[in-house]
Image (spheres, rainbow, N blue to C red):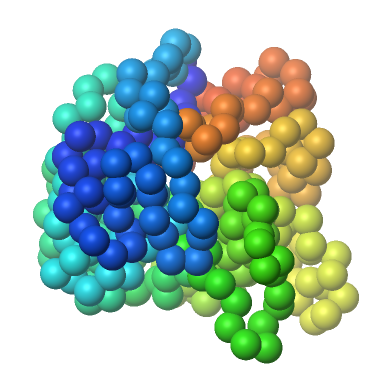
Length: 294
């Protein structure tokens, strides 16, 4: 049975916590208000019962673009706790990634949360990875999921965006840029400090692996040496992008992700064996602890 490592499902606890706020991120009825993005009309059906036919496991995660992890602790933790309570109560086939506060990291609190049965930790791509938090993961042999963070508007002098940015702009421009940067940062900085950490990058790491030729031309290296602990998931891409990533990294580090309810899991278009690897074998290797990993 297949695994989907990337879904979002807002439970009643989390919705009420968002509605209790009066500043972003907050939910006014079903209108979501965020810094850096236009008001978004949430479809209540997106966070109701969902068809999970064919899935043995669907991992939900906190929506990091909401900016919750960067709020002051007294604002961040009530929302994270509401997300945790709701996510842990979803029942099969759901599992969940834990979340944590990055404005004042608390490794002990993360350890207690992970020990409640979360699959690992999700962090925003815009967060500076805290070694203390990553050590909590490696001590438990649990993976990290790197997801796009808030789409902050550009500051004066930075790359422009349209005055009236289309609704797709955050997902296609800043989210991709964030993932591209995170991929290279983790290779250059995090991997030497945490050689045993398994990491999954959302949306094929913003296609950063495809820039290896430019990396080498500019003095980088590593083409042909694939890190088996760095995975990429497929959400919002299709056969052409997946094929290109497989040609660069091989199929063994590509895992199935949908970003439901905002997208559906793509058909890799690479045949039955590759589809089984991406949907079944590879995500189980990402999630399995050492004693059960094969």
